[in-house]
Length: 239
Image (cartoon, rainbow, N blue to C red; front, side, top):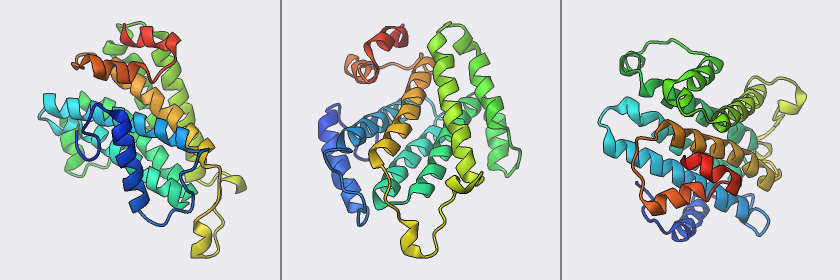
């Protein structure tokens, strides 16, 4: 793993994470008692995405196996800065993008030829609902018969659809309506916003663990992953 995500001591990494966030610019929203628990969960989930990406990069040389997950991690780091600087609508847009990068990771993991064509400039677009169904119907997922994978996949895609309403400006409530540069930054419920993102990243972590069951994790790493979920989900996750 790279950057601040180098230690199995996740609390130590969170301290560094806060410090780096504070360096990213003048914060409109301070890291306070109310939103710190949500930020800490966000950091933990980002840490886990970095863990998956690092494992894949260690095990595979082909870019199609890990590059979209690398970009998802980049989106999470950028999004955190956007939130605390006060860019609400750009944060919604990049949240949508990180969900797309998850689905692209799943698809291109098995499609090196299509990945190469993509890099050569092919402008084909596969609708996200097709990639969502691709995950559900993937032999690795169908073989485990875990109902939670469909539940988490459905939740994730539902969030994606909601975010599309902002991207495509589907009504007044999805508009920024800024008249000057100062109004681009806005006051909003940071805790609620981060929690909504956390729910989707939690879904992604569960789905990644099920999809990449061939990866080897230490006992500490397994505990970090499983303890992120409620007790009722830990057993089906690890089974």
